[in-house]
Length: 113
Image 1 (tube, helix red, strand yellow):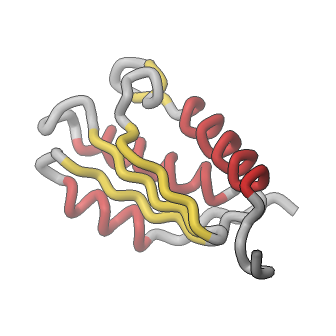
Image 2 (cartoon, one colour):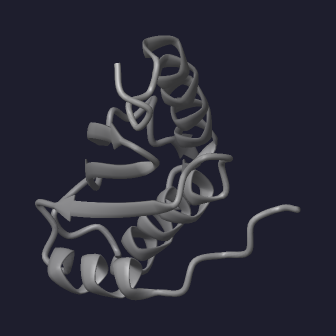
């Protein structure tokens, strides 16, 4: 194993922390966790970089809620120790391209010291 690879148990711990954060994110329209709603399609973790694919409750759910969910996903995961890049990909929504562009190009929040 080279020095850049994560040990499997480190990866599992990081994955658990990410899923804990995702569970805290609630769809603001209906007040239910995005994990309970099964909106997260895929989470890839690679050397401190995380990619999250998700969909929203419907292709026409209010865009403001889509932006909020996607931004929360990106910001909450980024704040975790060891994470230095997060990309969110929203699919199956009429504003998906705009949501993805705005969220992924926004400034990261400050990490806790």
